[in-house]
Image (cartoon, rainbow, N blue to C red; front, side, top):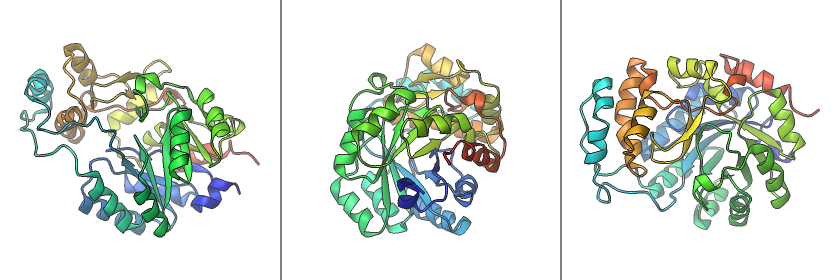
Length: 347
């Protein structure tokens, strides 16, 4: 048993990637019950929903679980900061295609981070992972007092050092191959596109806490490579996202199953922040129009037609997040993914 396993109280050092908007209690519990660490993304959740979600996770599994929060980078806009009407007008064909009216801007795009943190700490999950920043000292102290392990996420060596200096217990080193958002916070994500194979050993050399490798890990070979690079655990997203236990739509899972190595690309179209996914109508039309609102205004805007498209099963109007190793995602059941990944762990 290595340091990460002892720290998290898990049998196998495999962590489920937290999917903002695509997490499910079923998948989180399946990974935890299988001996790994199931994770659930809480992006945009108000306090009441956070408490309900942690309660549901506790009811679904007796094993350790993690929840994930987005730290503020400081560049987030409010409805008072940006006139969203031109962006709404540009996206009108997508609202029409989804069968929804062009929305009116809300009072706020996101719940206050302090309220989210308070709700998470009160709910007492076993682990809290954070992206896009460093938790402050007060948050880390309060987490420790409650026995909650805090994991940070880095896309560069400098970010890993900043997280260790702050006092996080472990660090996810996430390479540019990973699906979903590039979670850089010390530089623009476009300037921090370090591949997993290069990033992980440099982070391992730079910090003393356990390092979890993420990005492009989809089968036993990726796991073996991550441990050879010095990682003490792996975080896997796309392979689990393809499974029936995830909250991804059938169309999203099908897109992952047929994706080739060059079928993902980085875009700001869907949220206003750089993220990796499979191109579809929504991504292409927004990029062609060149009308992308700053985060989180763009994420709110596209979220309106994405929600309708999710309900109708239209894969052309949702965010098809996926990593560059999507073609290696071969299983439809989370238990089979776990078995494949476990086969790559060192003896």
